[in-house]
Image (cartoon, helix red, strand yellow):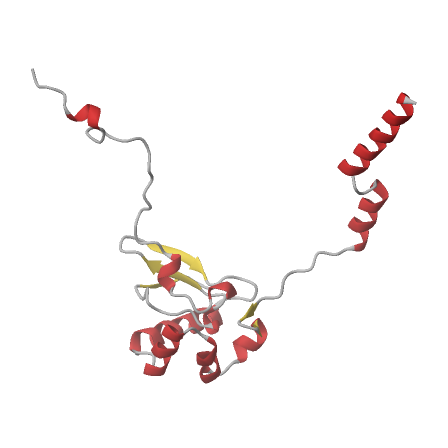
Length: 169
């Protein structure tokens, strides 16, 4: 009786730890192909996003960017877009375009810039960033950090009460 209970318990524990048999694992690995997630910005697919007119794009972006585009792009952002277009046109197929350096950290990334390589100035150096579809609607500055993040390590001298009141001899 005890041996029968032990075998039943062993079978239950084994089935809990391995819910799939080897045959199930082989079948799923053969039958399923890995599909890539299709990118969409606020419900609009990437290929449609690239074809959108500027008026329809303005309706998709957040309010701050909408206000900026309604006021019109100034000379410097237009020049940056022109240089990015030129770099994309001159590069061979299936290669990254040349890096375009800029100080325009407040430039909003538009779908036309996707695939370009931009050197964004952070006050010291140009950080090279490849523009990806997920960056649409963000500012260039968000991808080139201008400060060194704080690293909280051990406390230094004078930061604790015990080290503050050491008498001078």
